[in-house]
Length: 114
Length: 110
Image (cartoon, rainbow over all chains, first blue to last red; front, side, top):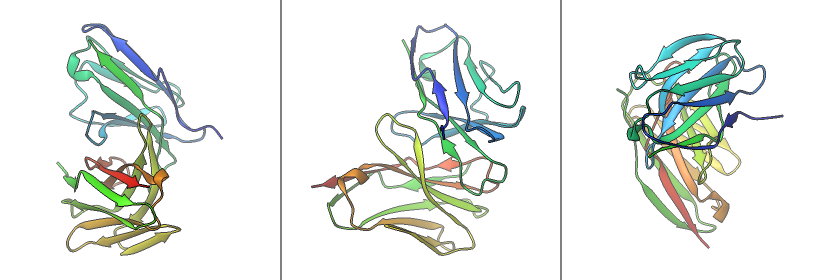
């Protein structure tokens, strides 16, 4: 049984560059979530997908951020024109429908913008 | 937005019980969770409780919910050094968006 997989685990980029993170959920999980976590804080919700449909987006998800889940399986989160404030860990999670709490997180992708 | 508050640090001796507390403001919370995060890692779901319950026990873990006071606690019995981690309380009304506290860093002293 493979868990939620995220790639890359670490990314250092220069300010202004674009970065893309990939998430592979647990197979047969049709819900997929993106969260952001900064040092000393809990995760903050960014967006979630039900299959390929993006159903909710947080106000934190500025127009520089875009998430896709084209075939309802893996998802990508792209950040354009990165800023230092984007430095954080980006967490992906997945669950079945009506999960009643069983949401499974990946190990996260650390982004450092220099 | 929804506020979930936790104390930042807790230190206990190995073998003692740990109690981590959490308060939340959203009276519509349906699901309440405890997650564990070890350094550099993602979050591991420990346990959850529905808002119509007041207690749930799972091996060494006991969750208590006081819905009137919007207070949730996690008790870890016989705390071990491997329990050292950050513990997050989270709540959700719909099971779609989850709101997390800032986490409690638990240190277990051998």
